[in-house]
Amino acid sequence: MFSPPPMRVGPLTIETPVILAPMAAVTDLPFRTVCEEHGVGFTITEFLSAHALSAGDPKTHAKMTASLGGRAFGVQIFGREAAAMQEAARLAVSIGASLVDINMGCPAKRVVAGECGSALMREPEVAQALVRAVVEAVPANVPVTVKHRAGWDQAHRNAPEFACALVEAGAQMITVHGRTRTQGFSGKSDLEIIRLVREALPAHIPLVGNGDVVDVEGYVRMREATGCDAVMIGRGAMGNPWLFARLREVAAGRPDPGPPSLLERRAIFRRHVGLIRELRDNKRILHEVRKACAWYAKGLHGCNALRIAVWETPDIDGACALVEAYFADLIAHHDGRVAA
Ligand SMILES: Cc1cc2nc3c(=O)[nH]c(=O)nc-3n(C[C@H](O)[C@H](O)[C@H](O)COP(=O)(O)O)c2cc1C
Image (cartoon, rainbow, N blue to C red; front, side):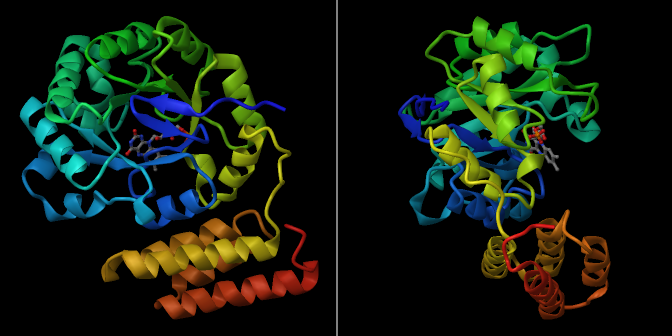
């Protein structure tokens, strides 16, 4: 069975080489916690504007949260002003971040319009200067890392050179999502460009492969085809933190425990909702609970009707009661073991 070693990023050891992808409006503290409890190796906050953090914006600050229980975590920042990036990185360190990741992959128009995110792949020297500035701002034991794409467009797939330039500037881990900026989320993440980045980088710099991994087979394929040191998973983890429990076993060379039973799915739903109630601010709880209801019923019999009913229910307890009744009914019919 395939059993890779833990990944080292400077002084940080990531035992299970599987990372939850930063995702805006998704990887909040409740979801990161659920994933950690299911065995993900490391989590990173969603991308946070360095400008907003340095200007003291309370909404952005509220998203910069330390993992519970003293678990190691990363903070991702984006921007292009060195001073703001330095201030944001210092703030991340002040809440205990084990690494500071710089976003150079976001394709969103509003981010690219500000010449941030993936736009930096067109300006390697500016990108290098930002890495140097952030490295200078944080203590030597806090690695600065970068997540970027394959390139700007099909004609400019510069990920290997770009990654090497960032490492020369002081980056200690690179994550590559194998799509270009112009692809957005269309087409497929290209494993070959990730392999080329692995080939180009110095051996001691870990490379994280990202894009389209939604199951155990995809994880093994990403590792084998690219030689990457860890795999980052985003969309495939939504409503499916159990995937991390499966990958933890597979990564340790043990058999895949398979998908969760209905009872286990319900338990994850309850835990996630409990964390949302405990950790999110009051205004967002109903929205987040509705999202969780849809996530954990996805793919099960009658999930669409449930989702609509939950969305029409005006209060949290009512929404949860619908999901409880839904699972109770499914479990009664399937003995708790069979996911429909
Ligand atoms: C809703 C959503 C929000 C995202 N937000 C971020 C982000 O804040 N920072 C980042 O680096 N990438 C972000 N991404 C990109 C993911 O981290 C990841 O690179 C991409 O989804 C490909 O991986 P996947 O196929 O496993 O989802 C986001 C993706 C999605 C779907």
